[in-house]
Length: 130
Image 1 (spheres, rainbow, N blue to C red):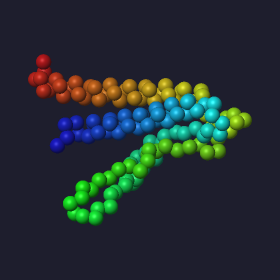
Image 2: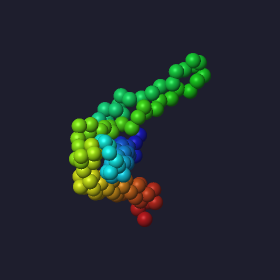
Image 3: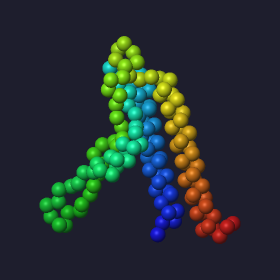
Image 4: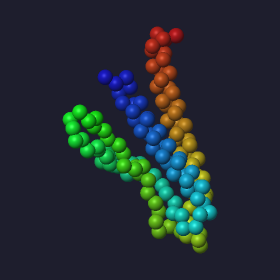
């Protein structure tokens, strides 16, 4: 039985997406002056597909070995390979990256507020409404 009918798990996935997107944007901003650097982005659709299909499994040679699975790479991240904003081959548009960072920060903060609200509701129920 799930306390919030999967809401916390969905919010967790949203936070994971937002965190990966934030790291990708930060990497793009950090490489704004790097020649031939191609900007990267995160696709939620691709991230969802990768999460459902991309796993690694251990080769078990004995039944007593513990089975595990792990993700092969950072899901959903892709490069703009043919995009150049500068003569040096760099594909980072600083204005776009800053706008994406602001949008992603708002999204992340909204998810954090929602998770906090869910836990506050649970805390209120546990304390008996006091």
